[in-house]
Each structure stands twice: as structure tokens, then as C-alpha cells.
Amino acid sequence: MHKIKKSIIERYERKFIFKNTIRNEVENLIKLNIGGFKEVYKERYINNVYFDDYLFSSFFDNVNGTARRYKYRIRWYGKFIVENKPANFEIKKKRGALTIKETFPLKKFSLKSFLKKNSTSSDFNFFQSKNKLKYNFIKPVLVNRYKRKYFLSRDKLFRLTVDSDQVIGNPNNINSLRKINNLFSPIILEIKYDRSYDKYASKITSGLTTRLSKYSKYVNSLDCLYRF
Image (cartoon, rainbow, N blue to C red; front, top):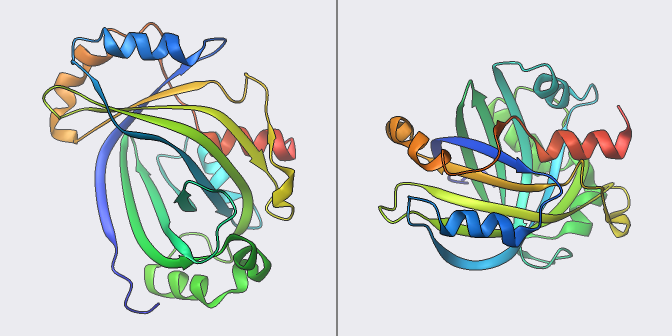
């Protein structure tokens, strides 16, 4: 664990929320966009374990619009219940509109055994001591999974993702995954690009039929799960 290498991505991530809309309608908008988007990669499930401290500081920083905020999660792809499969521990930092994502690869991740160990595991002692996490004593507070499709612009400068069919659950009972209503789980289109291309982004977003929106799967799912 002590030789884990991290990767860092800095980019803008802007979300557009479609409520009471089917995914095909959103995909048609993408195909008609001036950016000439084409689907890349295969559609896949994204799975996450989200973490927070005992005061839910990450949650409330987001709700209150704190300019410098953090989000912690373990992410893996495909099957939900995994044993000894690759995963990533991710720290997402928001600096205004800029997103900075630090990724630490985990070569062998087992969901059930990890959640049994909870936040007292040596893995997180390491992350906290070596990476100066803002929130101490973080613990699993949410699991979720959803489908994602990927699209890339003709000039390969802009990436779009479309997320749908989210289910959420309590990490203390991972067999309790359930759907949530459309208010909390709409179709989410996100445009991602290097900050040097920000001045061109309006040409892409002008073709969308909904407004740019502040939205967090983590915050909305947690609110639905715990009724803050």
C-alpha cells in the first residue's frame, strides 16, 4: 500500500439534468449537437462506495456551496459484488468550477470484506496519513451504481457522459440496493473538458434543451437515504 502511485486530472465538469425524460431523447440531442459526438467505449455499470466523516462534512459543504470541498469514494466497474478485482480510491476536490481528481489504484478490492473492516482498515489509515485528507475518520455512508454511456466530440476535446438507472443503498446492508424516484435520480448529462477549452464550451452546451445545473449524485442520494 505504501507505494501506491496516484494520477491527477484537472478539468471542468458541467452537469445538465433531465427530469421526466427518457434516455433515448437525451442521446438524440447528443447526436444532433454541433460537436459531432460519437459514442465511444461500451455502456457499463459504475459502482461506488462514498465516504464521509461523522459530521457529514463533505455532504454539508456541498449543500452549503463551499467553494473548496472534497468527496471521497472507491469506484469499480461491472459487477457490483466483487472479490479481488481492480478498483480505485478517488479524491475529488472542487475549486469553484474546477474539478481536481486524484486516483489511487487498488489492485485487489473485495466489497463485502472491505465494508466489514470499515474505516478502521490500514488502507484508510495510510490514505489519511500520507495524503492529508481534509476529513478525519471517514467511514462508508453510501453505496450506489448506475449505467453510463460515453460520447466524444469530433475534435476529441469534449467528452459527454450520460448516467441513468441509479440505485442506492446503505453500506451496512449492500443487499438493500433500491431505485429512487425521478426527482432524485434523473438522466444526468455531463460535459468534461480541459479548462483551456472553456471558451469553446458554450458552442456545445447551446444545443442542449435544459439548463446547466448544480447536482450531486452523492448529495441527492444521501438525502434520500437518510432524510437530512
